[in-house]
Image 1 (cartoon, rainbow, N blue to C red):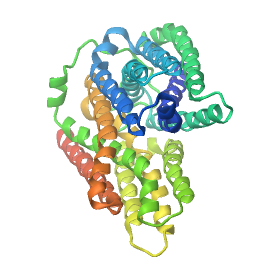
Image 2: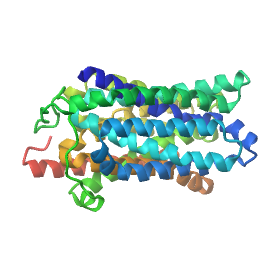
Image 3: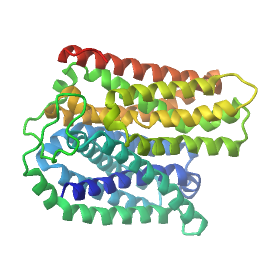
Image 4: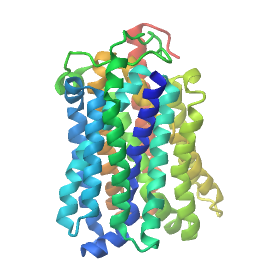
Length: 408
């Protein structure tokens, strides 16, 4: 029964990733059909990000009221409706309108499922689940490419993904009784150490609501929010600007730069699949620490002013592999660091910090680089790596002092 529920969650994570790459893949055609400037893509993504931040902050209250199963089904249903709405949008204002339920649905389900897995399943599942997100995000550009090359148009790609989401919504609605049956079983609690019980039966949510202001006052929460913001900022900045940096500053051919920029994303996805095999033995703390150090190594290789660009290209791939375990480790360690009763509220705030970092950092670097040049990218990324590592290590020290155990 637990395995069946876990399979449903895996599929839901693939579904989470499916729509995320559609706008980027289809916008070169979409903005022409909608007769708007190419820069208007930022308006749509900002509306989506605003919705995800709001629903992430509200996820703790909503999930406690209705349960993870209902929240997941309704949220995926909202994204399905939004994607179908995108497919019928003949004007830009309609696209903006449908972006609202898309963002609200994505944020709620992301926070609810992340907390559920963090509390009830081992670290390997958190890594594999986020690898599933990467799988979904990697599939959707191919669907958009197929729709465009076959002459069906970009709207067909949204309709296809929307139909997939609708089918998943129906499956999730049917699974709600399964969530209730599993939730009726008394849990095996997390151990006091860094890792929880690898296969403890999932349970329902606690009854005590944790207000936002109270959650923010919990010692260490601001530290992990800063670390999460920094990680998501560096990931999204590298995804958007790495190819341009390689071409403009390192003289790499555009086709080669695009290929290695895609390998950064593939490195994150593949790295999470690999990390899942040893995450339980290594522990969240070392997965996070090692990830930041590996990213820093890759960024250093990217920055070295050598005649050949080979080391920079390899450094980009290494940075992607280093990014892989950081996000899952931060989420999975939340119940241990802050308590199971607080984890849903804190993970909701973490999701908001993640979306804020992903949304704000890339355009910020774009503005800065317009004045300084693209050479600044490795330094920009290095600052974010340092911020994430320092904040996460400060949290580790705080947790060690609280638990009165030797510092590892």
